[in-house]
Image (cartoon, rainbow over all chains, first blue to last red; front, top):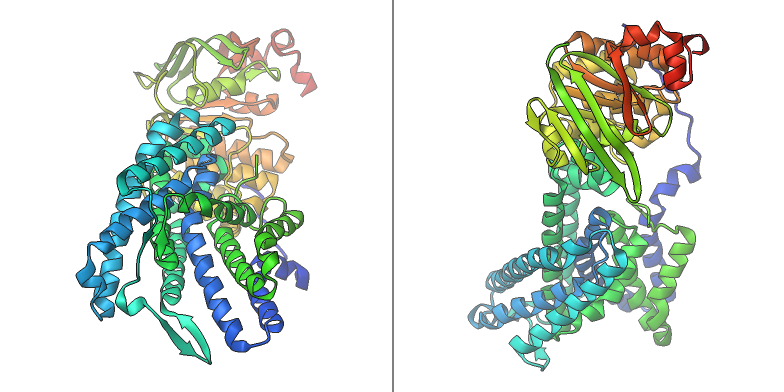
Length: 343
Length: 240
């Protein structure tokens, strides 16, 4: 039998630029932090703003990570994603308000247990809701982008109105669990305890998602499905089930993001999810469709930039993220780390 | 002819407003290589995709291993024992060679003995095992595509133009691998434009034109009849 000619590849030394190029999106984060350090006169202010930006970025990442997978794997433009954020916040905060004995106790463990129960409840509710949303609203419009935008937008409005029916029209104000209130002082900077928790949760979630996507068979199927769903099916995998699983997981993550954001803002409204969608879409687009890593980097950039600019030039804060998106899309029109090409 | 492992009867497939397949009748016997030949655009690729359920037959029936699979979803068709190598190779370019192969082993972990055999047939796959598949050359991608289909035992292999655009040395490798597979008793339905390869590998043959099978018989019969080749495909052996 003839065998294929093997190659003993000789690897030419890549240029410095060639070696750095894939890492540029990652390097943007420390570069932005250094920019903040140089631009902000007081180190304590810079530290406070940096932690705040990272916390905000992590929470946006939690909300956006599911959407980027839904975008990339299912080619679905889900404008209703914000509904899961709002429902997650309302369910989670309702649970938290009912656990006054745990949230009011001066014990970190009991407080975290209360938050954990709220998060589990919110994720269960939004996961089930995501399943119903996919079956009823999204399934009939696979492959039709304009219809997807219209019906998911309609779904968002319906869910917002249902929230008003169930929880009433008023904003709900809340206080964080006892030990998550206040700030710690580090190097002269006041750093809110809750922001540290948000950074931790976001980081753990990112590492967990990365592990699932990189080291498990289901992750392999998802990554392959983002590139060529038809071929994944031709290899024997029921991609439709994976689609539904990803949609449910994405919805549950949005619910988690809703609880985290509600605790961060200390107020929740029916429209809070829809209000977050601008930032979430910016993150998904600049990160690159379907890319969890890109989404993570994009979210941190958005969070940090918004905090730095709001401090340095408040009037510019309104347009800073749009400016960031324009700059990145001019540099990389497919986003920083695209997994699928934009259609 | 032995009992067919795959049988198509009156299969019609429409893509948008185009009627691509217009009543395909095709039998693929158990064991051996059946060549599906014809000019460009006559429906060969559509036939393979319709068998896999990637495009649905609007009329007719497709039976595989005694079961009607006309309305069966693609994953179930694949799991029933059909390995598919599409014309565009279907490589997951952002995954490594290893990950591509692991994904193809749908029923469990990769069998090491099977992998060793594939490495012996396609050594570059071992060399570039941990490289992203997108960085492979065209020939190496084709090797990966075929190896992926061969990583598990299948009852039938559907292979679409495996030698397209490849250098002669690589074509010889492909032909050798398919001959090896054939020697193991596999059933193969092979779309091929390279008539020399078709002649070397084919046991039986079906020629398509205008969305139908217009001739079927022994490969030997077609390869020895230049006038028939000229009439069916506009070529003759002397030209290849």
